[in-house]
Amino acid sequence: APAAALLSNASSLSAAECQEKEKPPKATEKKVTKEPKPNKLKPPKATGEKLHQAVHQPASILTRVVTRGQFQKVPDSLTLKAGDTLELRCRGRSVRWRFPAYLKDEDEGRLRCVIKHFERHSQLLVVNSRAADTGEYSCWSFQCRDSECQDGEDRTGKAFIFFTGQELFVPTEDYYEVVQLRTNHPTLLPCQVTSPLAKVTLHREFPPEEVAVDGIDILYDVKRGFVIHRPRPSYAGSLFCMASLAGVRQISTKYMLIYINYPSSAPKPTVSASATTVRAGENFNVTCTVFGEPEVAIDFTWEYPGQQIGRPPYIRERADLARQGGQVQQESESILYIDEARAIDEGLYTCTAMNLQGTTTVSTRVQVLPATLAPRGARSG
Image (cartoon, helix red, strand yellow):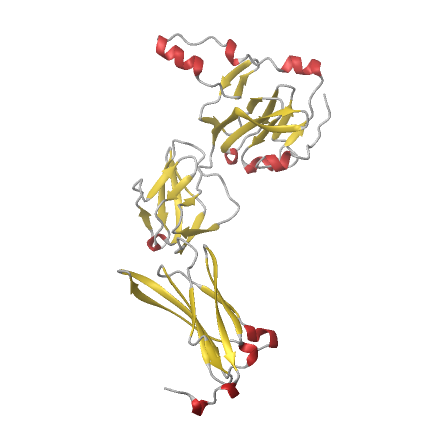
């Protein structure tokens, strides 16, 4: 048997580590690669229309070895029992795999996952399977010419495989998991079940109650978990999933949901000075204002000429609700005060406003005139 070797590029191209073995000698390969080619399979007896669809449907590059010499096209989802052996084959000369992260574990030296590369296909073998191995298994092949490789057209295959056992949920390491409820995109609660037959409900820990799943605001996906499409503050708090199957009930990891009113865009600040021209010794201020969505925090920073001599900034900030354009918006404001202006205070005043979506910078210029050019008593009304 060929010696086992760990390929250096395996971890970068797969979701988890798995031991890979080098290509065996050609004589061994001829004995192993007995998989019939898809174009030689006899089409099932059907009407002319069904036969036409069967011939023109692109064949998947992913197959499952049922028994020695017997192969099966892997469906979109497959259910096996924990402890079963899973053997998948992926056609191609340069194949990479992606599979659940739990397969990287080796329990007391027991080898659970092996990948073997042959000349025209690659083999993934999972032995002593567990419920934790539930997840998506996919492969893709590269078309290589000389030293350049690229993804081949229609050269991917994937399947979601359930490994049913005593555990109804795929186990996780954390008792609590913090999840952000962000208003700008759906939120996933990844309570993954190990059986597609399990009935799963969503519950709140305090106060204890079941959360309604209407298929619109909240949707359940057996391959992912619960998806909250329209996050709102009322969903915040501690939630968990409950699975029921054959009289057995289990709960998942608890999810601590934190609501974040995520802005739809970066802030759009405006900046203005109380006077664009001041005289030495006078006071002035520069104001930076942002109108935006309520309950969205805005962070302000300033750059000003006096920084180069160490003049400390005097800043006041506030945020109030205001009606503008027929809508209630939040008015966030930062005011930079300059007392007893000096020549060094002349120049560019730059305000930077930042929220979770981005940063925007605006500037204005202030000119400082010598006090001797215009004494205070000589001003005209």
